Image (cartoon, rainbow, N blue to C red):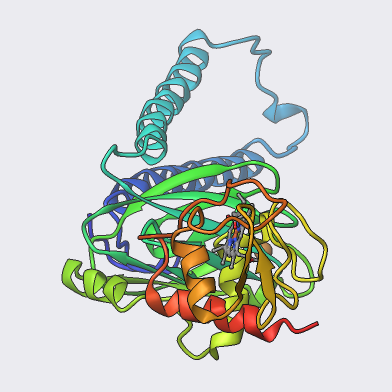
Length: 314
Ligand SMILES: [Cu+2]
């Protein structure tokens, strides 16, 4: 539900923001009401029953059943209302709809990165389609951060060594502030991002263009980024030490000896083939365990990885 902005919050822009706001204002105005009642009552009683010498003494009062039942039952009803209402909203905020788009969120000092199911990666900008539930699978590389989007009334801790999950569905296109709400060190106040909510069509076009496909990066830097984000590093080192797979250092321009005998020149075509069809030529001394990246990497990404491997000279 769309709600208007107030002193406390910007306009609500998620399906749950209306619900969160209603509960917030219920608790808020109830607290204001009781605050005024209690403070005013205190002041009146202080004045009315002030010390006036012996003449003004009241008789001893031990208790008043009606009064005691009233001031027990009314607050009890009020806190039960808050409990039931809060619990329902809490469940809605925590049970992720089945058809949600899952995006991986990584917090680290001091930026956010996002990995989309289609393979795109963005930093400090989460792009999502409007009117679609979005599931966030979150973790931290270092300390505790907290993912806070005031316009969506959502806040969830992002922890190292553990996943936290939350979701939202934006109801209006636009750019919304994303903040880190857990003090995480020197750069905490600069750990700012945006949630960019776009139409379905714009989202599809954006994915098509291949975001995180190195816009503003030269091919070598982009390749270095993919080497990490596509997990090549789990099997290939860049410093010459053999791992599950051969190191990338100095392979380009040399010859690779093959498991079935003979050798092959390591050029662009061989590198490309090794990425798309790893079983075609197995390097001597290694197991054929490399997964194919056919359909996972776009041409531009393969080019960048090749450029990166070429840059790793002995
Ligand atoms: Cu942080």
